[in-house]
Image (cartoon, rainbow, N blue to C red; front, side, top):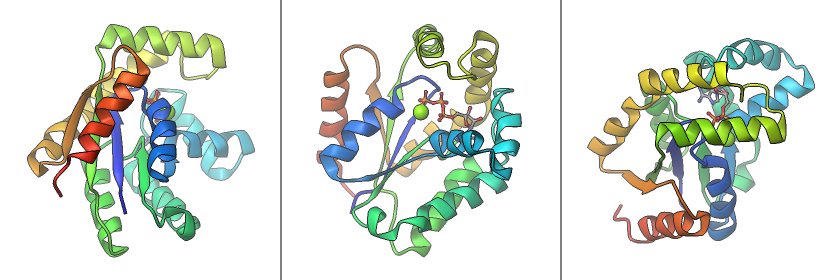
Length: 193
Ligand code: ATP
Ligand code: MG
């Protein structure tokens, strides 16, 4: 069993590296951004609420987000058996505390946090490019600037939170994608837990 959090600023490459990780380790991928975008596309009640926050570059409130994550986690018990890669969650300290508790209640734990570290100007460039190519509505300059501010204020404190726990593994998220993946693998295969 291997449960990992892939951590990083918006545009840091969490989704890209997650795809490689699920293949390599047979993990189940839970991307909260994708879960929410799927609800928006289907026009569910959650989707309507989420859209209001996402289009402003804000976070969905913790209490709601934690409930959503718990239900996704319990949706496919057979798929999560080998382990889960959490992408986009946690984004706040209360979410991190809730995640530990949820895993503990299910008889397991978080094994590692992989942090993709990418300079801000590179993040902006990548998201503007993604916005042009994919049409993702929150990848416009205005919303990108707000998301980065929210990241610095609410999410980046999690680095110290997990560093103190000894589970944070920083990886240089710039340059060749194969090299980034190899670095992640080295961290995961040599971790002590
Ligand atoms: P990346 O580019 O690395 O995939 P991202 O920040 O651009 O990351 P998503 O993870 O797809 O994008 O999230 C998109 C939006 O969904 C966030 O800006 C936020 O509004 C909302 N969201 C996703 N996860 C959470 C969460 N854990 N808590 C609160 N809001 C969330
Ligand atoms: Mg993503």
